[in-house]
Length: 334
Image (cartoon, rainbow, N blue to C red; front, side):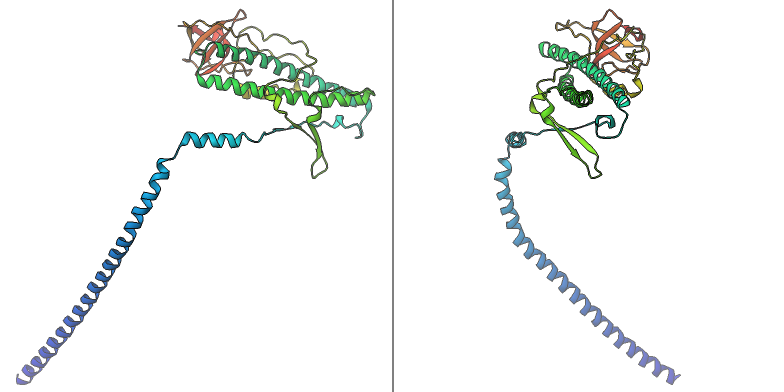
């Protein structure tokens, strides 16, 4: 018993010493932690005191230039710089095999091919010319009657007119190229053309010929005169089916691309310059998909402002800011 009591006391003394040493170690670690925390806090305080005035100084320096910002003046400066240099758009003209007299081809076959191409281009020229006349009439109507159509419609008309003038120049340049090949084949002198000096002929890396038309600035305000124009058939009755002019070369026609213009503006139909402010309205009864670029797409329930009722059953109206024609049999007046 005595022996175990001695051992217990010695164990207690060792435990007491271990607890004391552990307590001192924890105390030292805590002091170091608090000291490091204080150092970090002091460092943060010094940085904050140092950066704070600099931030205030930077804010004061930024205040004046920000207050002097003039958006309108900046935009005018950008516009003046942008408009300082005259841009000259380039159009890549089609180059047909039959045009190149130096390439091997039967003379009669070459002649027939050139005349077919020439007829195709003339058809597209006439179609584009009539479309331009209709857009010009619409532009005059919008100018004389501001409440006829929205601001987007007026912008749409301006853009469409520019596109048509550019397209007329493109087709006229292509016609001149083919016509020159015909004259060369027939041994006749080439005719003069206002765009002839703006056509640049180059060759790509593979040696193929490329004809590039650099549009002159006057194309934006004027149109190239069209010398020859074939006769065209009428659109047809307003039964919802537009009639395209018959041609032996319809398989080569570019009319398929006209569906890209379905949401465009009025084309070859007369637009009245005096429009009644008390416009009638009608509601679409059936679906109608535009077949030409001067027609409106109709969905049942669409409400259309009627501007003119044409004798052939096609009505002129405005739907969602887009002006065009539509068949009267697909709507009912409200």
